[in-house]
Image 1 (cartoon, rainbow, N blue to C red):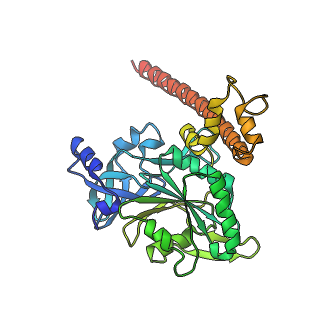
Image 2: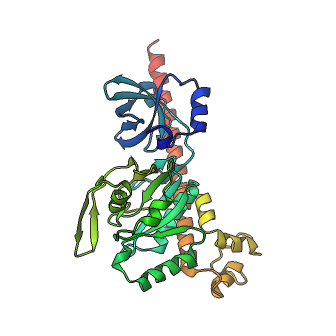
Length: 354
């Protein structure tokens, strides 16, 4: 195995040279847990933590390593390492942090393709698919829809689902997979050496089974299927990067119960480009596109040129994005006020000593 097999490239090496960090070893973060990390190199893995300066100068979560990051590190004991620098990222998959108003959670970094997995027997949902598409498009990560468990439905039912996707979602590759011997052949052919793929989807959609099939090993345990809800309990509880047998790099994720939309204006624009094209043709300034007579968007909805469900989902996520931005501004103001208070207290304490 080489660094290139892990996704290392010329731009990363150029950054390493230009910043004078050739004296450090280079590796990729494959596991993160409470500010402890596992770094993978071509020959071994290291348990790692941040050097103090990197920790204390961090201004936000973006300054800390995440799964998928390239880092410069030094070994201080057998299998132990200190992270000195995080390399620039070419993509960051993120969502609104669950239960934390106005905050973002990094899913993974340096991703080339987002594999959006939905089980056709119970999980298929176009609205949720569009949420994942927004996350991928906002990060400039190429989305790919993986329809799992297709052996549990008829060919006619699968064809109906594929038509629903094609009618509403344009220019996104869709790959059905099943548990038959050749059920993963198309997906395996799509995986290319040196590219990084991130699994996205709810619990129980078959991500662990997919990972095991692609890796050729029982890397992730798959629990029994619950008869009451036809749902497999996914045992993944953390993000982890895995190098596949044919050279691709796959990042597994815990199942997402919530896919909150953060500051993803560009993601909305790409995902719902058809709606926005009609909106640009509207002759009304500041049109809501909901009830104005003569609105081009409303006319397109009435004559069937725009999908009503897609439009409603777009409006819902647009409002969600605006709400996130409002919360983020309020949080930023509070952080700024807190910073001023801390500086004031420090100054008062310093003055009292003289």
